[in-house]
Image (cartoon, rainbow, N blue to C red; front, side, top):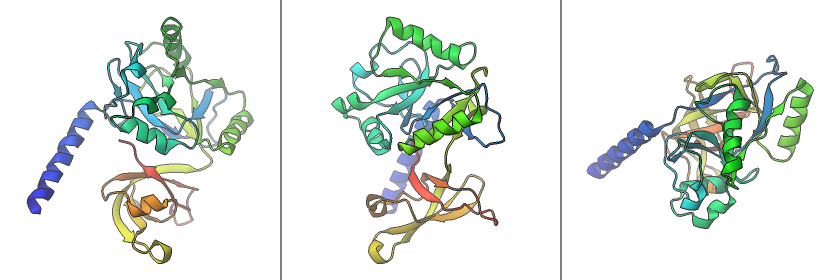
Length: 276
């Protein structure tokens, strides 16, 4: 038994190291608040799919996992890097994740569109970088490869109206970006997510058994954020999540609605296991 666990541990470590070696250096979003003046920036819908980074040769997830779509899906992809979201429709994250992470999804990839919001390593501001791909696609059309529409923000009310429109139709939120910023990686002040709620990640430390209707299943999890803050999450889980809870050590994403006077997360709700 000890030997088996040791072998599993070694295999997991090797897989993690391989993923780390392939992990692309991407830009990440900070969170918007009303004190930020974003008039003159651009906005687009924040799609709830799987990050798909094409490095010119391979399609990778945010965590560096190589995806294996059918050959037709990548036919005529550009010889330069593009970054976007693999997506189907609003509220369909689980199906998207299932399709792109299964090696033999075959025709199910026909449901996927690759929505591009960045063309890394190109010159100029965001719109100029995106125009590089637009120009390429005019000569090399790919039906499922789309440049995500960027709408100029004229005032804060326009942004709030767009956010309301998106979320009222089960969309995740909005992304606002400074169109004049040059390409950078890391978590940027020039790229912000706008949501009706906040979200963040934590690492699962312990799983607690359920009671009542959840007897014999998971009731809640104890997890810890990157800042060291611990919290218990018991809502947002579907029955299948409670039957097969997130593994201890895995990272999960949860949403919350601000903080209590004591600085605790207000109404934390489980969303999903973090994509690798």
